[in-house]
Amino acid sequence: MSTPTVSKKLRDQILTVAQSMDNNEMRFMYLLRNLGPQQFEKLIEYSGLSRSTVSKYLKLHERHKNIEKRLIDGKQKYCITEKGIERLQVKPNLNEVLYREIDDNISKLSEMLDFYKKIGVDETIVLQIVKIVTKLGQTFFNLEQNRDLYITLIYIFLNSVITPEYKYEINSFREHYKIKKIRIDYFVEKLMSSNLGFFMFTRSHIHGEDENEDIFFFHEDDVIGTTTLRLVKDKLIEEIIQLNKIYHDKYELSKISETFAKIYDLDEMAEEIAKKLLKMKLIWGRNEEKEIIGILEPFKMLIEKIIVKIALELGFSRTFLMDLVVQSELLAQSIEGKKSLFNIIDGSERYEDLNLVSIEEPEIIEDKTIDELLEHVQGFCPNCGKIIQEQFSDKCPKCNKKYDSKKLLKDIDKAHEASKIYKELILEKEIECPNKECKRII
Image (cartoon, rainbow, N blue to C red; front, top):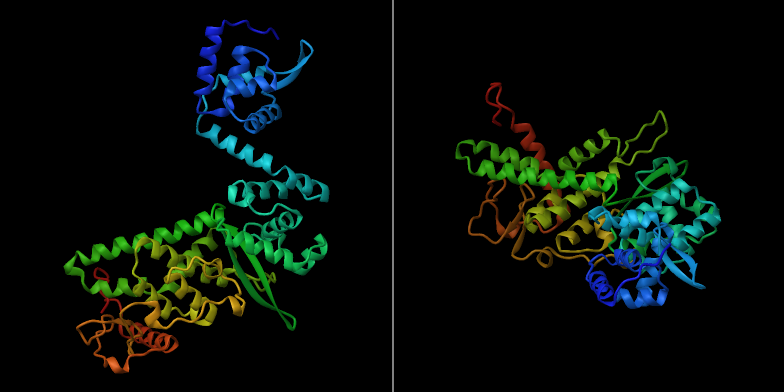
């Protein structure tokens, strides 16, 4: 390769252009293309960047064969290749930025990749783990990078909702990889509490005489996470639009109770979303003939947490969401599930609350009374379980029954029972008009 001879004036112009480039990566190919082969120290001087930054980009270009080292005049110098010249002529775009970020992350993962290769992890599994990690950003690399973290990532992948064919029970896993359960738990805790976008839920089942608990993971950016979050948000927005439309139509007031009945049923909303995921074959139900243990039920409970969390972000009132929780049949089966939802309504960001996991007793947030959780709350309507706030009327805004403020329910479980009885009563009394052109609830 011939070394171009340039005047001092032209060289200064080239250096000015190079140092003004927003894309630091392209500076080096621009310099080598216009000034010819250069030593490392000269590239530091000409680029105006730090030694570590120059070293990083030169290694990146060498790996992709955009530049190479050659012995010129008895000295090792960097030279641009034909591939580098070609690449320099292509204007960087959004995909180029993404390419650089991913490549930079992969270079940080070299230790992990070497470890996986050493212990013989299948390449297809390694690729999937790398795809997950590249989405986690710098927060992940702030964690202690070691063998136990890398093995925990394998554990999360093998127990992901998107890889049901790999399901790996914890004791078999730790024996296979020679790792203590406490170390897996430690790094699962680190990954979950670092707010990296992971979701986690457990599934209990009976095997013989023993009760076992399986664990599952998914990420907000994988197909399970993106689809579930989109369906929840779409459902809530649909309800907001529908409710506003009905309120503005004074001639269809009879439909208001019908709409409130639907939006007031957290279980029904979760069921609808879960069925869509089931139809897409993203989650699976129980199949006793094939001895398949489903994840439908625990996933519905997790959906209810996601609904409440997103509804809070969309501006639904805390009192309204409290009503949803009190009336849920599904959540009534889990004391921890119910407590964690109250915590979410109260603003909790703890992963133990936002996910469906077993919480050790010392970690549980202390029980909160209704007055501590919501301001200006008197109690629950004894007829329908609705939360009663301070107001001038002595009639329940939901069932329209008069109440004595001294006889309002103070216990959440009793409020749930009243809500359940009221719902059954409404379903018995209300029917759809037999006129096919009407469809009003009578």
